[in-house]
Structure formats: structure tokens, C-alpha cells
Image 1 (cartoon, rainbow, N blue to C red):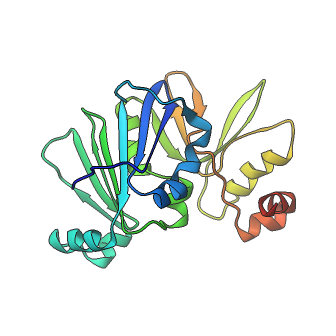
Image 2 (cartoon, rainbow, N blue to C red):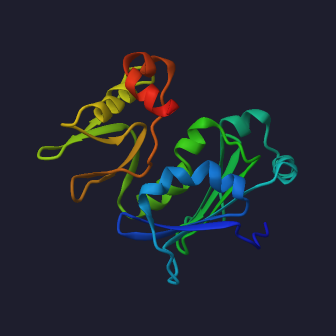
Length: 220
């Protein structure tokens, strides 16, 4: 792939590391970057520890899928690639290809179009971040989380539809609680800390019935 121009670039700070997000198209930036707004820092001339380059091209996407023999089922589920060595990771998931070089911190997100599915724009780059954070002894987990300032955080785990999201989002309506995560969060086992990596929360029909004040805020 040739990634020759950046329409938008943002630097973020997370888990003590400098991360750069570069988008080849502005529409992709508009779709994915808001999830990281709370982590943005002033641009730096230093080399980032992780640099994710993101772009989309429907024709090239289809050609690549055909060339490497992916089926439609592979593209909508998961196809993991065995690359040249253990320092490289690649996965095709939910209509996008993700690549990470764990040694250099170079990463690629290559999507089918600029309108990724809802989980992707709410929680971008999960495969890349999961592999990169794991190599740094952090765990990106599928869990909601809430906290009490003087007590600590609680992880909310369970199968889909069990009420994790609704419970976590309810913290936004209670001044005694802190909202940490509705879907994914990062755990630092060495410090017993829970970190908020995404500034997003997804309201479904059930959550809006239970939390009408959040639905009104969203509409406003």
C-alpha cells in the first residue's frame, strides 16, 4: 500500500505513550477520531510509539480480498494472517484490515469505505490497540466500567444484552458516580487501574427507555 498524504493527523497520549493517528481522508477522520477526543494532546515532532495510518478505498479493498482468497464470510467474521514473524500481526475483521508491527509501532487500518459499522466508529482500531497494549502488559477488555472517586472502579462483565451498557451509562445521570467505559476499557494489572480509552457510549432502544434523560441530551 502507498500512504502518501494525511488529510488529518492527531496526537494522543494514553498509558504513558505517545500515539499518532493519521487519516488519509477527512471523512474517515470525522467518523473515527471523536472516540479519542479526550486523549488529544498538542502535536509533537517526536516519533510516536504507535502510529496508526487509516484510509479507505472500496475498489482496492475488493481487489485485495480477492487476491488473498478471502470469502465474504471471512470478511464479515475474522481472518487472521500469519505474517513473516511474531512481531507482526494482521487481521481482517468487520470489513476492515488491521496490521501492526509490534517492533516499530507502525500500524494500518484499511477500510472498505468511510462509513464503518457502528462498533467500529464507537471503538476504533480494537485489533491494533489490543495487540499493541498486550505487548506493553496492558489488557484491552470487552467490559463496561464505572467508578466512585474515593473507592475505585468496578468492571461490569456479562453476555450481550445483560445490561452492562445501560448500567454504565446510568453513571452519567448520578453525580456520585464516574462513567469510565460502556463497551471497552483497558486494565493495567500492575497498578490495578482501569483506563478509559474511548470517549463514546452507545445508546440502544432499551437504554433510552431506561435513561430518557440521556436520549434527550443526545438529541440536543
